[in-house]
Image 1 (tube, helix red, strand yellow):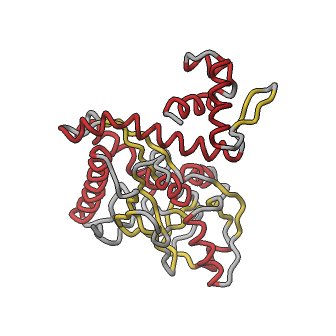
Image 2 (cartoon, rainbow, N blue to C red; image 1 turned 180 degrees about the vertical axis):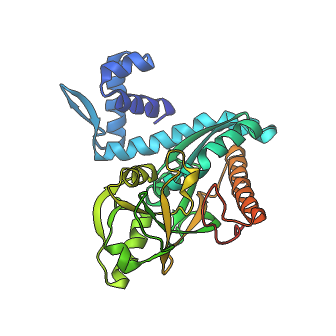
Image 3 (tube, rainbow, N blue to C red; image 1 turned 60 degrees about the vertical axis):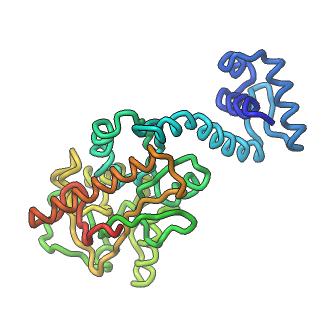
Length: 315
């Protein structure tokens, strides 16, 4: 097995057919078919389902595709890694972020990276920590900024700050109370994260302990989608966000403290073996968090870039 076999296989899967793959990677179709047949014979399993409609990976082929993609990405980064070691950090860094953290940090981080790390290219992926951990383990992502309910095992983790969940309500709801109980919360129409999700797991346990059943009218996958439901008045959301006005288009939404409090921990996770470029992005992200906390503390109010940071970063 050689690297070209991995490139041929991933090219075929991405193209969906031998014919299209042959045109993309500039290898004759009969030669591609022979190479894949030899690869399958060597591995002793079928990697591709072949039909008149094209090809698709088998169960074993999906695993092979995932691992082959990871290997090829690492090989492609070797040149940048060596150059970074010799001088200024450069190369692609695959960064994962929970959608809530991305709403607050992604743009600022991208802007800072362009200024401080001009030779680094950031590839941003958003998702929940439950989705991110396998991507870290397979090296499909280099680093991830996620929200945790419990410490993520099997990875290197850097706790950044603690954040409280809030009830986010539509405008003109009439109430004046600054806080809401779990019993009051359960009576409201709620849009909740789709399972599996870290925040949803924390909410499910909290409601179960309190002996109440939430009125879930919709489930969504992203922070932005939840805010959209609230913005139209269709539901209330429970989000790691105490100060909604910093999210453009949602300046007039209200946030209420949940009592008793439900906390999440923002963490930076990685495989622990990072190239210089990924190390530099990690340091830059930690600096951005520190700047937000410092500004909030000096101003004598809650931070505005990410809300309700109730402790300093634990580095």
